[in-house]
Amino acid sequence: MGRAGRWCGWVATGVSVAVLVAACNSKAPMVENFNPLVPVNRFKIIGTVASSTARMDIRMMIQVRDTLKAVGINAVRTGGNFDNVADALKQLCGPNATQPLDGVLLVAYDDLILYDCVTTKPAYEIYSQTLGLPTLVNRLVQYLTRKEGAAQ
Image (cartoon, rainbow, N blue to C red; front, side, top):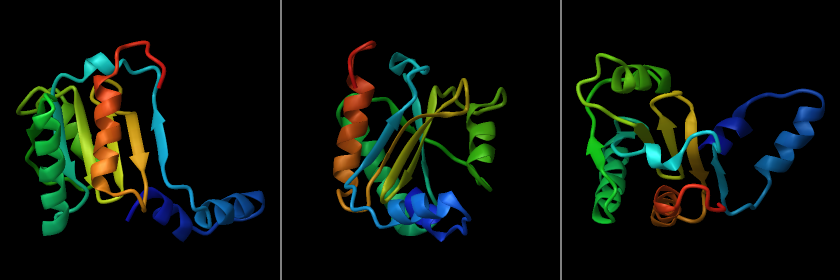
């Protein structure tokens, strides 16, 4: 489930209820964020991880990895069993990692999150329930191939 779907399932109180209801009823086609403190040129090798072990999620992750490779982005296969994102980042970015990675891309059908291995924080995220995975991947490619200091 995408981030907005998870948020909409939470119980909130007070003012946050109004914000939550507005966000859940929003028809916004896409939410895209990037961390300006993480340089884009840092991502030389990106490990890809599916959001779950379901066959379809793994297929989508492979499709995303293949698309990134086709446009010249060094996206690589990762292995491991992870309980959560923090565990994945610890295993894949830590000092005992089996391969050097600069970032880890978490792939879901409606959400792509690129984590920076140096800070273990999200460097880029795009979410949409309506645009489809190919559009999300194209936006990620635009982010990864932009020149440093260029306007987003």
